Amino acid sequence: MARINVETFFQKLLPRTKRNLQYGMVDDRVFVQKEHKCPTCSNPVETDQLKENAFVCYHCNHHFRISAPERLRLLADNGEYQEFSGGLSSLNPLDFPDYEERFSAAKEKSGLDEAVKTVVCKIGGRETVVIVMSFQFMGGSMGSVVGEKITRAVLLAAQRGLPCVLFTASGGARMQEGIYSLMQMAKTSHAIALLERTRMPLIVVLTDPTTGGVTASFAMLGDITLAEPEALIGFAGPRVIEGTIKQKLPEGFQKSEFLQEKGFVDRVVPRKDLKKTLTFLIDAHIAIRGGKK
Amino acid sequence: MTQRELQKKIRELKNLAAHHKLDIHEDLSRIASKIEGSESIDVTPWQRVELARHPNRPTTLEYIEKISDEYLELFGDRVFGDDPAMVGGIARIGGVAFTFIGHQKGKNMKENLRRNYGMAQPEGYRKALRLAYQAEKFGRPIITFVDTMGAFPGISSEERGISEAIARNLKEFSVLKTPIITTVIGEGGSGGAIGIAVADRVFMLENAVYSVISPEGCASILLRDAKKAQLAAGLMKMTARDLLSFGIIDGIVAEPPAGAHTDLSFVAARLKENILTHYKALSSKKLETVLKERSRRWLSFGEFYDPEEKEESFFKKFLPWGS
Ligand SMILES: [Zn+2]
Image (cartoon, rainbow over all chains, first blue to last red):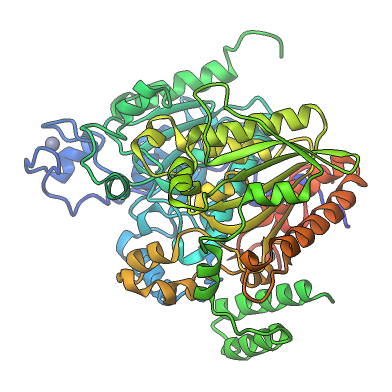
């Protein structure tokens, strides 16, 4: 088999200039604008005020679901990032009826290309690979493109020696892609196994909601697992479980705080503290770690 | 060109045609079905689902007993308890010691209640991983049998971290330093199935099914009609032949015409022969090579269009590092 320079692949994936990456991508669109009422406290909310408050309800602290561009604006230094693998597009490997139509409708409705965006940006001055899922695009479902983009991003972090931050938001598998979608669970998990060999940290931030095959793969494989307050996080959805056990679920079941209590989340972090927390964690793993190199 | 390669070529052409909105899709589908047509196609996908779920269908433990000269079951995850829905232990076949791991369904109501219909909880997946680490330590190859509707969707399962348990298995099995051979013997349901199915070789019994969601689930969520499960079974492309044509599995183990339950010895003999053949092939390679091939296998799964790479995904050809 012909040998290929691995550098070439990653260089093509994300060109590196002499000294630094080319940032400069800023997406200023707002996607929660359709909501005029807080789903938790029912008070009316103003989009502008919401935006200033990191899309957290200024009455009751409800964390609105945000998509990749909003997340990156909050997180990346100056809101600037460089996207890669943005051109990958889904096929319909099962010839599943209406998949193309639903896909186009999702694009139209959300203004996004796919349920995940993979970028490199700076967080607190440190270059970081950031993966952000958007629940707004087909429920954040994972198909071949989502799996491939996450795999590439994780391996880019390994190859370039960069920390990796991964925001999850997903209802689970992209069912229209059938078995291919299931295989993405193993594919992304294997990429993380390869990243583990490099001592570069993977920091996962679970956001509302994270369920199904995404939870049972990369979402649970971070070196550090953070979660936004009150996010729904589980394998089976609450309705499925209620259907199995034929009774109501206890209050707070499968919420971030519940997972922290049960030992599956390192820490619940409010959105306004997230950048500070991530900056500290990245620093602790890159700049101020003790021990031998 | 083998049938698998031919299927792969057709798939690539289809994808290309679909992307460029070319109108040769129908032709390609006809060619594809002609190639498959060499075998009989009397059994519908739904009939296979029913055979895979047949109450008398042979279970993991029955196959292990038939296949091995000696078998000793081992229990417990060393953390919480033992999960009867997941079994495993050490077996001797000829002069070789194997570690077996598999979902275990019951054959009657009482047994099914104890075994939770083969729906494992976190302790089941953690027991599987414990046995897998043990196998790795002592250089035993691992044989897994998949037969589950899915992981158990319940309170206990969630609060003990079913997601974490499955995720960890996916990651760890993908780099485990010993050969792994998996066979889906009945139902391969979603994350609960793949939690013990990351392997060097994956096979299916002829009437086994393997999918991301049950046909019932697909019908109620995507087709918005729970009664359309039979239709969904076809749309999901979940039969052994579908998965072979996708290149997701490596081969099919034949069953008698009326299903595995009509002749356990016949199926067990085929299964054993298949496992031993592929174990021999894997064990003749350097472990390093086996691990690299496993890496490439799992990184390569996915069908998408990449404007940069045009023909094929990078991971289908190369490993991210080393070769
Ligand atoms: Zn509110």
